[in-house]
Image (cartoon, rainbow over all chains, first blue to last red; front, side):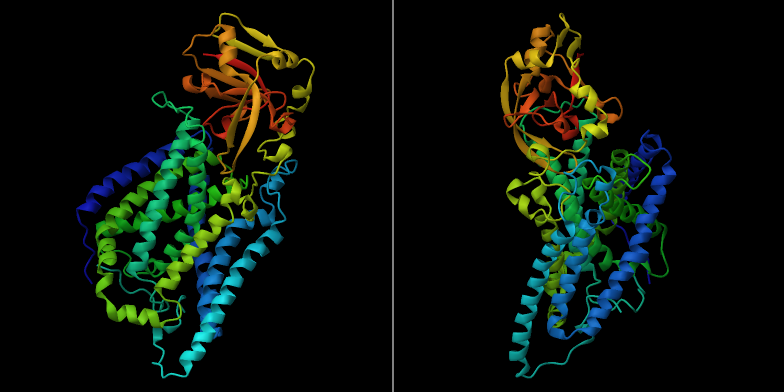
Length: 162
Length: 380
């Protein structure tokens, strides 16, 4: 196939963006708070690798299992609730592990809650919503089931690649 | 124009240009908001000569930094969803089809790596968690420039594709029909991402929006929790100032470009005219809370010492180490009637962790610049 074509926007944006990146890279190299730029380089590569080769495949795997294992009426609610759960766990995991408070143990105002209970409370809200949504879908599927329905297409149970 | 030959394993119709475009537009907005508010915060903390941050409105920094942190947190699901949608493109083959295409794809690395790094380091900073060997603020700031540069390149490259993907939707009834038939269609997917962003916000934004503080279940801070009912970033013990702050020979000195250098004991400070002000303490980590402070106006001390009316002031702490052992008051901050050296908060003498015997509290300043355990004002 042919190469992608680029309009004027690209040729204007390219030098501007490269200049901004160069400013940031020169800043990294010259900043006294950063002993060696290699450390940041390693963290940037690590961030990318951790996402592309750990988090993303894991999400795909979970999505694929759910898409195959669950009946249709609760599939979308469970997938949605898993997505929200994953995001909330990412946001709270430092507090769950005590990362942060362990560096300032004499400061009780850092991570002051029982985060296991707090997280379960937040997730209970999410999964209650998913349960209610599933119930609605089950009820309407029951009504529709008595009517003739077109066959499922291949795009029928996605959200996650298999 | 579109990438070809994504591996067959990616069968979900959600991996398409329209989802990529919609999430891309959302991220373009949130990253720009984070970048602008972040650079602003950086300028306030390290002002170049051309930058004078005003002392009013008193709660402005609280808003800009609250928006910075809340927008960054809400970007986490947006970025993850976007990366999932475009994941098949990572495996496109051949990897590039022209030099311009190669450059476009190379710029995606700093965009993705920088985006993840900024969101992760920002999240960790709200927890005061620093698992890396470099200074957080330096790294977060410079990588922001790299990320925004890569974003500009990416926007330029995707401008036409994005426009086309967003405009053509109305003319695609067959595909729309197929999506509606599937269990997890576009609308459900995007709504879920929106709910995730909303849930993150709902469960954290109470760290700065106090009516929602009881819902801040996943935030590292609660604006109503800590000594005297609000949080502390650095305790007196960690700062190593407990003895010096309680010592009987504690003094406040006013010196530098003044006609009459002044020295005060604690009792002499209490005997000076006192002024009360309700001001927010707005931390760069994203929490903020308004308290009622009472103490001596910096302006009054400058007048008493015979300082000129256009002076700037450096406020020194008893704390001897670290970056924040002093802070600067520019002209408008030094002479604002609400810029105080506070002795009390909410009618009680300051807790030692809040800066006993004396702390700086001024309108429209980041928390790190509200220097605690103040012992010296140097007029410049």
